[in-house]
Image 1 (cartoon, rainbow, N blue to C red):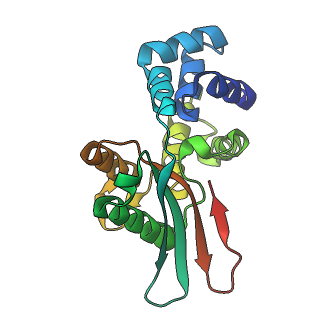
Image 2: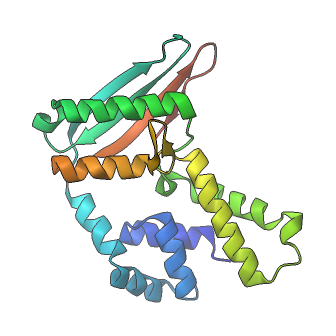
Length: 203
C-alpha cells in the first residue's frame, strides 16, 4: 500500500490530483522519481501546471434557497475575467451548482480536495470488509478502487451526478461550460445551510 504522505508529497511536487499521484506511485513501485516520469508521460502533471498558470481572480458568490425555505447553499464560482462573470451562462452555472449542493449535501469539492488521510481511512475500511477477506490481493485492490470511485461520487461535488440531468456529472457540466465560454472555471468553495443545523463550509 502506498503511504499517504508520499502521495501528498508527489501531489505538492507536480500539482497532479491525488488519484493520478497514487496510480503513478503504484505503477512506479513507490519510487518518487519514476512516479514523476509516469505523470509527465501521461500528461497529468503538464495539464495541472498549465491549469495552475491561468488565474481565476473573478467570479461570483451565488445563493440558492429551496422553495421550502429550510435548506440553501452558497457557492463561490471563479473564472478569469469580470466579463465572463457577468454573463448569464456563468450565472446559470453557479445557480445549478448551488442547487446541487443544497440537494445532495456533498462533503468536499472534488477527490483532489479530500485530505489524504481521509482517503486512506476509507480505503482501509473497504479493505477490511469481510466479503473481501478471501479474495486475492490484486482482486481486492481493484474492488476497493471501485468502491472508492462510488464513494467519491457520494461525497464530492464534482463527481456527483447532476440532479437536473443524471447523464452527466457536475465535473462534466463545468467542463462543458469551460469549452463553451473559453475560460478556466473553478468551484472554489461552498457552504450549505439547513434550518437549525450548523452551516458546513467546504473548499
